[in-house]
Length: 352
Image (cartoon, rainbow, N blue to C red):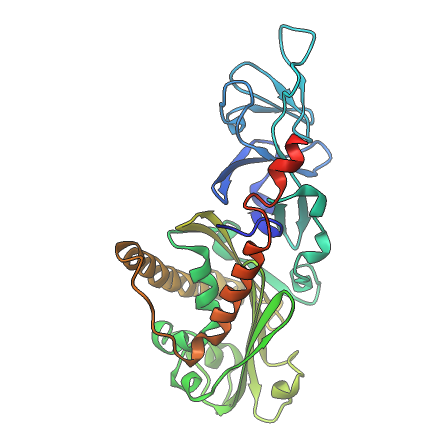
């Protein structure tokens, strides 16, 4: 079961052009392309005539032409031309999904299109702000990840794993000494950990060239269904970062969105806006290389979890204190899914 009346990241902006682009989202094949004016379009990737994927076709003007018999569909999913005949059969259409291009991603609404509200897209303004330098994760493509997308959120909300999984980059023993605090809002869960006078992890020592200990922060916010901002960094002791003045020192965000492909696979999107070394190509390369390594270390962990879960799906878990933020997100997500129709109301709208 997936939450459908919400926004998911469908693709990076650079992934979608004038050629049809295929991706499976929430178990549904979707084709994306751009109109002549650059606006993105998302349609069900299945021709209503004989079910050929429309992604095997061609973009003609602003229409998507099926590669089997040449039926042409406009950006609303309506078939507007059938070669060899003057009329279009009644009901000749495919589903069209609301899409919004924002923060260098293309966002898609998989539920009832009449409920699509782009104000619900997270306000990740750092991605477009000139004072912040952005490095796209995985070269501007999601990491195909063989696990339930909720495992990605679990991983990001529990940063104590840094002390054991990422010891040569962003983790050290200091993190486990400090408890986290959890806050819940209407559509958001926040985890906060403030660390005073701690030894900086290897990446921070290199990036900040700190002569000694630092004040370090971890603030993780997850917006349903699976959009997580990891606001992290460190600065000199007493600099004020633990009181909210975090635009200093080594300050950056890891912006993450895990979009379900199936119940056990997902598309893992991530990006790193940073507020230090913003003119450094060398630091860009550190993020491309070292943080890709960090994320792939997480992928190895999450895929191993999924394999074990698949072997024994009824075996339970033992929870510990650091699980509180992730468990809160899971409860909120279950509440929201239970409150909407199984298809998000989309089928009823389309057939009305």
